[in-house]
Length: 146
Image (tube, rainbow, N blue to C red; front, side, top):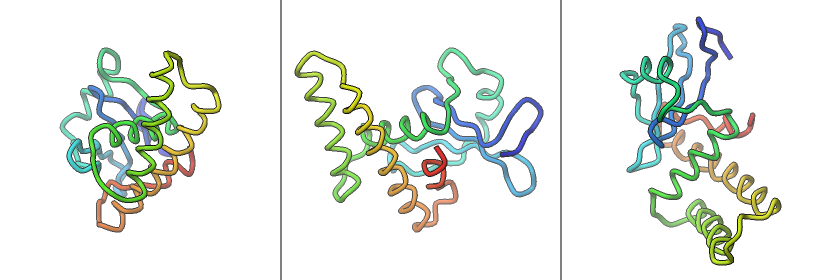
């Protein structure tokens, strides 16, 4: 973790309901990555750096690494469709949430813990796939450290 004037990197945000992370570059600068609504991968969006770092509040929220992982996976599960183990786990989470909704209740602490654990696992799986495909913004270690 590196300190910049008033900013500790990496830092994590929810920017207009889209997960964004700011990480340090090897040269000591910062790079902004926003999760893609189309692929779940990372798109470099340095043009929103000032808005995020100076405009926290309103539709920009700071997140812990752990909460960021949860936000990313909720975002991916909502926007993406596909086959394979990651999407099967997304369906498992959807089923738990749907059951609680159908019963008119919040998820139990056990269900919440199960959802958090599944999302942490799918984050690592998704990020490892992105890294293998050459996505420079991929970082499965965020969930391992969270």
